[in-house]
Image (cartoon, rainbow, N blue to C red; front, side):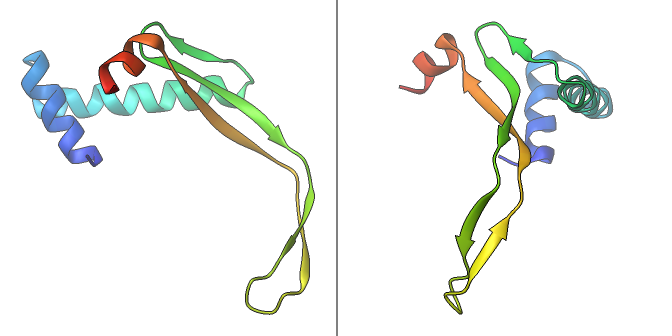
Length: 90
């Protein structure tokens, strides 16, 4: 499912217009990104939680040349599914 299909599904399930559904989805994405940027955790009971994790620097290998390369440390977004979501997917 892509973003347009998600907006269509949100509109159909909620009774909102597609334009309002797009605004709601964009607001959710922006709010979640802002919270994660400041180091907060976003928890949606029954759905799951988003958090930031640190990846340390490490040495990798270029698959074409086999030469070792340095991979810098970075922050990554993690998602952990909630119990209700996990149960629905089984």
